[in-house]
Length: 504
Image 1 (tube, rainbow, N blue to C red):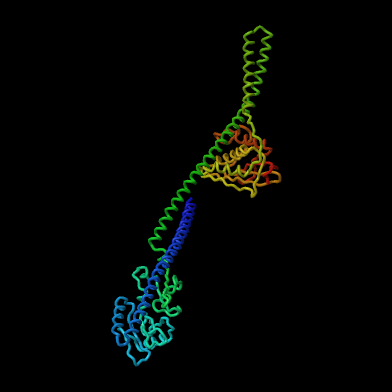
Image 2: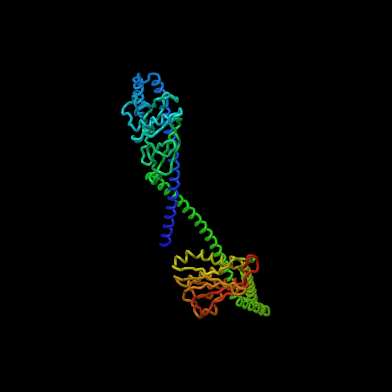
């Protein structure tokens, strides 16, 4: 029983662990979907913001170009005033510069200005412009890029107007979502090959789209490095485990209640079957008793009847009227006793039910269930060793069970810790059912008369059980015997195989 409890415990533990893993996998899947969805939404929001900021650069260059064309070098103060305003209110624009194609002419710059290499790049970009704004990466200032426009915006241009833009400030945001170590941003050149700012922490890009600015189609990319702690935080793991445990316990409780109900139904069914068998046994035992009593009393009653008739005859020959009256009464009482015994014999004879095809194995299994509790209480055991194929005979199923029940019950009564075995096999046209036990065996002086009524080796026995089995087996056209020279006490039933449907 301890081994069975241990196996049940480990089986339930494995099932619980599997259920928890399944629930955690589902929770991780949905959490990942939520994180990816949130990344997409946050990325789209920041993308729109960066696109709007980039569009503002176009407006700045247009205003600065108009001022410079109108005032020229002589009124550079006007341009510098506007440039100062731009850099103050739009800090991502770090400087405004006007670079002449002719290096001998003066350059207009706001601090910190441009290096010689940067000026050369600005002029090169302006010369290659066909009217559209040009983008170039700052050669000596990381995370910054140049936005260049020729001025005037025609082939007669002699100056290049350039904004130095802080790419990191272009995609700056106050959203705490981007402060997490698992998130990353990158802004790359329009070809997507050269990053201006940032690096992706995961090879799986969550979002990638050029900015919505015609002049600055910089590629905006984001990613999310999803770790196990992101998918299954400790609080969620504990919540899932608690929920699964509660559901598991409720399911186990419901299953246990269902098994108890089913067990109670089976017990009630077995109890009813046992009551039916006990009733049939009592009725048949009473029939055997009545038959035995009739057999024992038939001869004395016949003698009384004969003597009473002779006395009446003698009295009629003499004058002893009182003797005649007594003898008449004796005859009447004797006849009455004979009639009573005759009615008792007819009443005790069982009304046999029609035979039907019944399973020998089901009868053995039913008896095992009926006597399981009694066997367990007495430390005994009932073992089945049945033929590999079903075996069927033509008989009343109740009577067949009653025979097997009486044999097994006798075996259990033989000793407190009896080991009883019910085995079956086929011998030609017959089914062989053996009931063996490890008890002390049948005394030698009782063996020749073991199936006679009122012959018993038990102090409180009636001696009718085996007699009843013998009569029922004969009515099934079978045979019952006590085997000799066997290691265990063995009663053998030999019953003809059924030829009806369902038989093997």
